[in-house]
Length: 324
Image 1 (tube, rainbow, N blue to C red):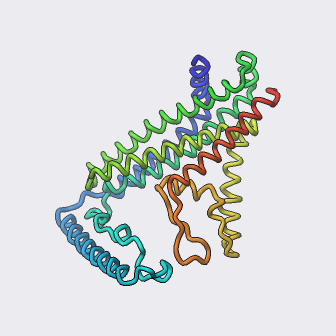
Image 2: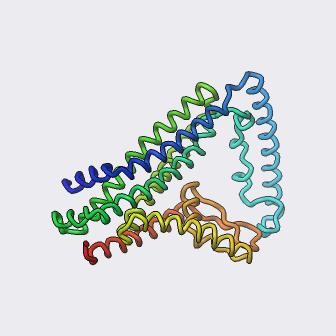
Image 3: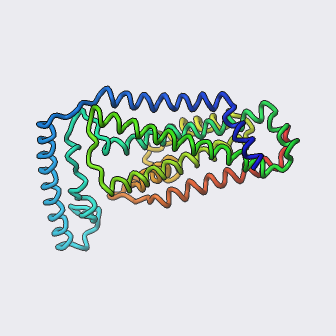
């Protein structure tokens, strides 16, 4: 416990950690400022028009759903790629998804904007977690702090776990704190120059699950940052690997292979990050007439497995290599 407290203090004593957190905060403030400056309070006439347009859209979707059910009753054995309607009639033609607020333009609707802001918040915090954790461990190696610590506490596995726990705890507190402030500020903006929208029990359930998935992603990225810096013993290893992977693989290799119609979506980490964050996603293989579904749990398992492998490698190298 004493070692954990010491590591927790060392974590936030690094100016780089404070700087990266500050830059992340600026991105979040910029997002809120943009929303606030572009929003207006809807007039009663605009609300009434939006309600009428939404009801018209709901009626059309309900009609399409009935036609979809009748179609599959008449042709239940039709291959999905040759069908006129998707197999899941209720899921693809759901009138309850159409809200009145969808037809209000130039208005910040809290119930609608919260999801997008949580995605943005998760992206910013995940990158911050990876960079902060990577710089924290890298600075310990380059400054000689790691060597001094091992002279005081030679048991390396507890040292690794204490550093990992301090990074995870710090990012957890930072994520929850910034998340509450960010969504609270969004609610304040919507209340003053927008509209709160329709908040139901389903909205609360979906938002809570999304928040938990975002928090899990931040923890994953923080753990990867610690592992990469332990493997390379330099801050630049974590940051350079992250940037290099984005440029060379996610953009470069994806673009080149897309030209020759080679599908590598299942080999890219972004696929599983998206699949986990959005709660499952569809993949369209090259030449396929219908998509494959990548579940949230499959995506999360892959992310957890990759993180576990990197952590095991980092822990093994930390235990075996010379501290100097």
